[in-house]
Length: 409
Image (tube, rainbow, N blue to C red; front, top):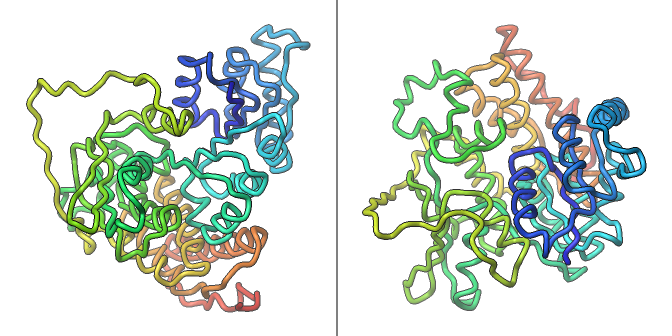
């Protein structure tokens, strides 16, 4: 019986994971559920899965959760231990009772807990791109030292993980990550300025949370995946190629030294890679209907347009730059996406804010997770100021040197 700590239980990955657990209660048991502010859904999850510990974002969220559990009529004696904040997330990630940690909190909120779980040699199901985007060097160094394994949950990296089992790593020359192209794959660049949040949230293939959906529309999400793939599998950015594949059936391809390509193909349902991560190195019966190969199907592949989707280019450049560049990339993108969703900036301005933030924030080489989080905080300050200046109609010319005062390594 594998006991799980689920970081991000009320998000799209979290709820899909719990559906996999629901179907395989003979193999999995929930030790801890970690959520943010969705106390109502968390209370229902507690009632069904009976974790030993539940964690929310703040003390007020904990009070709200207590009220929800009382409303549900759940006897106090059957409640889990209720914790909140970063200390709570950290406690359940490293707890002896948990042998598998699924990292699915959006943003850097789950970084410290995931990092410490890696150091404690927990098996990690990694669904949080920001862990490696913001702190790939430190996390992978910790994984090497502890001997733990990070099993990717993102469909593309999960597909690559499966393809790499077909041969020796030394025989691999290239990784291909597929992308649907998002809702604006064929939209003329001249119309990008009129794109609304509602349009950008209408992804043609996947059902995801708001930020990752917008990141898919800008192709920033694919850029993050390039960075994550470099850390997970030891590729240089030049060895990772993004291919537009609107049907989203082929998730990744590995090219071997003799020119052979191995592709991973499955239904477009996140329960497939989630179950793979939970059961690895075994395989279990498919949690979703299988592809029907008696029906005709057409697949297309093509190159991305870096001019129309500049955030993908910025991701490659940030990974090449190394150090804290990708951390700043992620922080600026989160602020820019939030501002777009709040209708403070336009769709094209998301990329503009990110690029300007990267130009203003020096590249450092953090030596600890604390330093990573500080760089993240300072980068957000710069991005927020840029957004405010855009809203006010001014120009962003203040130097970030006054904002960032740390010593360059």
